[in-house]
Image (cartoon, rainbow, N blue to C red; front, side, top):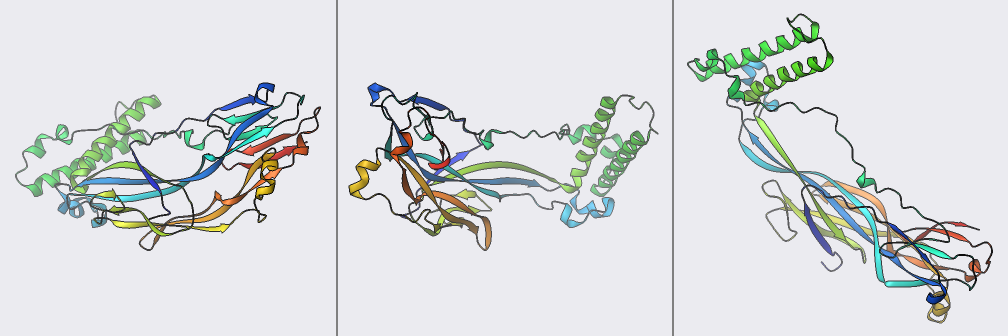
Length: 358
């Protein structure tokens, strides 16, 4: 696996990275009226979400159809532990390429020249203030759904239930209790119950208690399934096309395992270059020194990314990859106007120009 450089990070729960700050750096005389910066290279982070499901059969599973009218699909008939591959997403990130260090040079006596850089030195803007957009990952979505209180079903066992002489009779009594709870809830909703709370909050508490009790009884028939979700990350630094490389393996018995662990089935990745950006060539050796006195920027290329498991495509999209693109330069004449400096905005994640304001 020469072209697939992968770093696996197991995260539970997923820790979100903090937002990078922007640093304004002035071009001073002591620094030769120049500001050093880095161009980024693309790193693709593959986020893999999978779950461990611990299922436990209900003690009255075989009576679920007889007493509750449930079909086989809605009940758990056997105790088992298995893993499920839930979701894969790919995040495109730019990190400083330490081999691509350049200098923004200004003419002497240029009006207040400055450059905005990220904390790790990626160029954001020239002669213009810059604010990084809020990281979409840091936006948290609140779940407003109220969780039912956990109830130990044994605390609900009635005398009739405990004195039942057989499993069949106990299942029948449990089913009757479920129907009683449903009738009670219906009475509360229709106002036919005695001592119904008059305020909305009290009504919600009563209904939640009835629903939680019903759930505890029903699970004696349907069984329970506990789901534990884990997120793992793989980092890929594209250097060339990737053709059906094993990203990791997955097993319903063990979950996510290493690419070399044959206990799991392979999850493959394809990454194919489809666009090299601007077709013009990079500066040749004769022009290099001159060009480095201007601003060097990226024109990113594009690649198609596909991740698949067996015959199922788990992810398919087009991403920008700076390594597949070209480098270009801006003319030094842009900075010769000392009274009205040109403002330039970049995409820090790719090193491409976003906007030039004259």
